[in-house]
Image 1 (cartoon, rainbow, N blue to C red):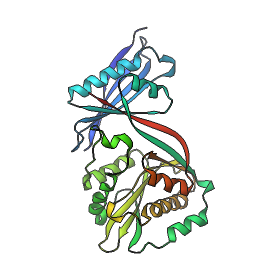
Image 2 (cartoon, rainbow, N blue to C red):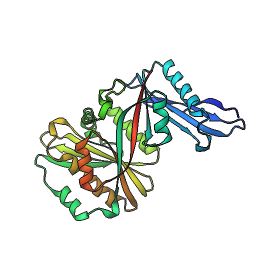
Image 3 (tube, rainbow, N blue to C red):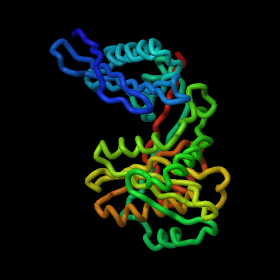
Image 4 (tube, rainbow, N blue to C red):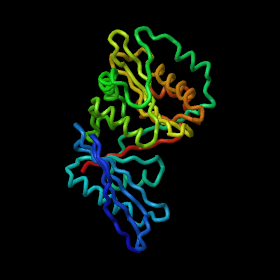
Length: 297
């Protein structure tokens, strides 16, 4: 049976880049697989592209994935990309396919879930209410308020030195440059998907600057599971328990604002022992692992 690979046009461009797409279909025009290549255009990531590839289970082992991959890699080379990243769940067909095609494992992410009906509310109140001299908590929904936008954008560099296994030492991984426009664009993207973005931040009372933050994305209907997007503290403010404080406040806010939520999901690089201890202490239970792979073109 013949397979056709059709390049598609993905509408919409954002400050950080755009997507290319391909559809694999059989002789009857029935889709059997797809590939998307996110091409980054922001400063520091012009060399990088991110691949997402899927083939219908009944159609695997017929070189459909290989043909989709060849099309995506050819486009990446034509665009001057030097590195392509992709993720696959540990033990999955994708986790076997990518290494066979030359991708190298660079990062292991452990996913964990907190079932909100198991949370010790009293203990949570105690964590959130414990004073942290010199700091206070603040929070907002959606886009950061204007008076905090500059310092929030500056606080994003707290993610730069996060332990990331081999990925942190790989030429294919770069530091994302954040400014106010990028912060607002990220919030807008969440809103346009119909989801809700909640942010809790620790503020340095000496100058009103943000010392750390944690973000949570909630389904638009407030039900099911929400996803943590990132928790980080700037280097000069570490060692004061701010990460645990902020994440506990985020959990408490999620339970109060969205009683229909079932759980909270988070993912942490295996090398990030600090955040793993926070998650364990707050009751998150590991569910599965996802591997990030890199290919140098």
